[in-house]
Length: 146
Image (tube, rainbow, N blue to C red; front, side):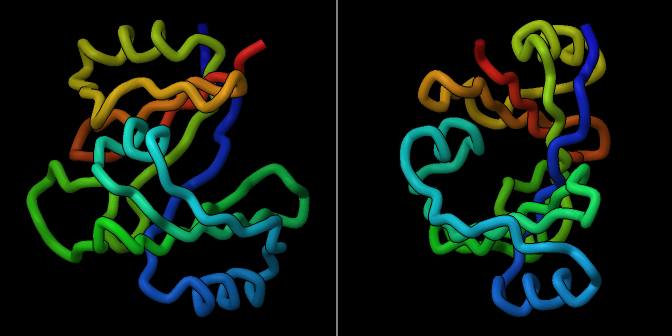
């Protein structure tokens, strides 16, 4: 079993409009915006009371995307230890699409991977989770169902 592709890179920002404007000026295209909150967001991130605004921007070829997020709650933080939570300002999470999420997590555990929260099911579309890997890097995994 192997990953299928890199899905997106997440970046937590304070000023979402300014971040979108920067990346659009760079040449990326705004794919869409959304407000995210609720049990799936809490389960996936390992945080309680997640409420954030996101904007997805993609490269012109459509193959690479950035998910820009501004946390309403819990508030974004600036500093801390290597096991920082998911709501840190700056780039810190890379998301991969995988064909078997549970197998992937099991294979990565011997390499130090730890779940931040739980494996979450988004409707009948995805299984999602965040794991902490080497150097405290947060890696998101997504398995499309069916």
